[in-house]
Image 1 (cartoon, helix red, strand yellow):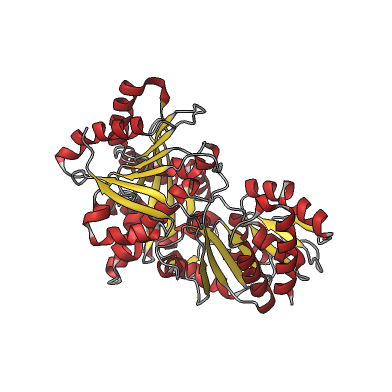
Image 2 (cartoon, rainbow, N blue to C red):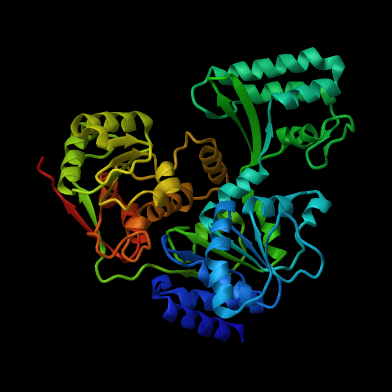
Length: 510
């Protein structure tokens, strides 16, 4: 049985290379092997900074049939440079491994490495020819499942730029001037509004509907698409969405160049994804997916069917300390006046490098300026630094993207809890949709996303992280948003950080 073989081989490897060991390596490898053998779906939450890739690569290499592993291009290069040669040489494995964008010749029974967006594009395409790029029934392992929702949204988004407006004018030369007028009117309306990513207002959608009715008239069916054969393909796809429910119309606005890109995507992407999961067995592997082990909110957003769920934590005798200074709530006028002295006290108390996470741009700028006045060139705002005692003031997104390229900080400060902002069109549209459906949008959407963000943010600091050295002092996490201890949901967020933390609330006299 493949589970036994994988267990034995991996156990042998880890005895020879203990630096690659992770306490849950064998359990996860058996689960992946079992999924391949039985065609069972699984969702596995792993802590960041571990060697968990071995736990799905070895079963995939030992499985006699073909397997797809979906990871981004950069991770593919790491796998081909590190794990695959080591596993093949150590265990004398000869299964072919290829990087592909479509399925190779018939009879290929190797391991295929595919970019997740390429795989999703093929699987979600209405074009049968493109859908055939990957045969049904082949087991799929997707690593990086914390990004799966954004990957799917990216694939399901249709975008219209200046060149597409020109194509429409050429297709309907009699209406060239009016199409150009609609484009200019829409662009000016969006350029007058602040922000880079904007949700279209009803009057802006009205401009698109007016142009649609002028050009193709009633020959648009919300299910069948634009019936005018002369309409360009992109517009045939996008125009019917003006009358479809639960569509997010947004725009990417580049004020510095005057460019405007109109985008449309389904709000409820789970409807598009649900049929996908029935076409092949799959294993999803990700870091910090949900508050709960069962990941119910995550599964709902992605339309996942019933499956086996596992969640692994780092194991450690010394828990990661989490400090919650007593401060006013973030929307209090006294919060910002007390914030600066507390931050300076925390940074001085911990002599190593520090990371201060705050996504509110005005507050971020204020914190950056205050700390730079105190600590000088040690402070960088959303910029990488190599200084031993550097201080990064950054967005949550910036830290999550670049955390592995930084030395593990001695102090990580969360200025406010990372609830998604309803100024983000995706978030606002999802909240509106859940309200219409009578769902608890806070506990089923905003809170799980905040918990997942916090889990991923502290992963380099956790005991057992491969990014930490055993001789390093224990890092400290400071949460300055006292809602973590005063609101009922705060305990759920702390529990989501896992059993390897120790929390205490303290008053800082500064």
